[in-house]
Amino acid sequence: MANPMEDWFFKLIGNEDIEHITYLLDCFLKFEKPIQGLQYLPTELNQLSKEKKLSIVDLMFKDSLGRYFIIEMQKFPFENLVDRLQYNAAKVLSRSLIVSQKYGELKDVYTICFLNYDLFVGDNNYVSWLLFHRDGEVQYPKGKLHFLFVEIKKWEKLGKFDSDDIRSYWLLFFTNPQLLKRMIELMTPEQEERFNQFCKIVALWDTTQYTEAQLRGYEHYIDEVRFTNGIKFQEYQRGIKEGIEKGERKGEKKGIEKGFDLGLEITMEILYFLKEDLISISEIAEKFNISIEKVENMKKKFNSIFG
Image (cartoon, rainbow, N blue to C red; front, side, top):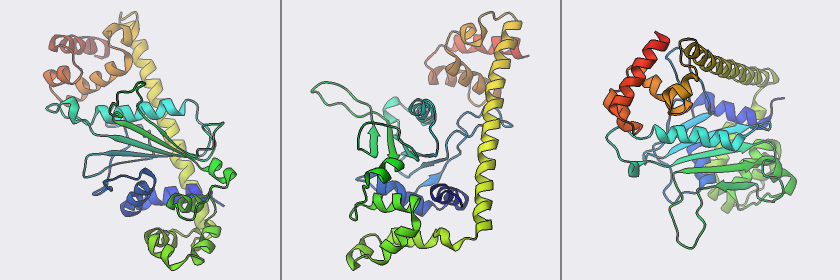
């Protein structure tokens, strides 16, 4: 049978249930200002062309306050996971300003990652925040990138169920929906009233109402998603490599990164804007804090390399 966590996760994706996802985020992030007006955003953060898209995150949203939310689910250990999450969140942050806005207008980006394995070994915290930090007595804003890790396996091993904590009910829903159903039946009237919205979600997404064939269908769908994204990632890496090799053959001996002297990641972003003609040269110069002359020279080099 499908893993309960995966089955729930991808049913939400397929049905685009904004109300329930909003509730999930509010339960774990615990904002003073609850999320309102949540909307789906495209997950292709590295779209180098209209034909080739690279889906990096599982779900991405923006609310009416301008806050960005990334939801990821990791079933197996992923090498350099924290670095990858920071990289993806930074991409969202860098695209959150339009040309006329100032850096002070950047909006917060929240990443919540549900892990079906232990990431932070050696402590008993199954919910961990990773935040911008400054040593010293003087307080400083926490920055714009926020990361919340939920280690589900650690929560199971620690036996951390708390009947007064909605997060415990969510995690039991992910791991043992049958037990959760029995616990809901034993709730007091006060608990039923307090967790009424969650109980409605459980009734709607009850995996026992699906046949084995339907659950196998979801597993097949999940496999296709992973296979497709794996192929796209390989194509993306191959394209970058071929571009560098072509540049070297044309005389750029040190490749694209050295040839443009801005670093590979920034260079590729600028080349993308130039290739797709999305914004003007002056706007590119302002966005990346370089001179107009520099952008014009990059465009000439780009045309000479790639024709």
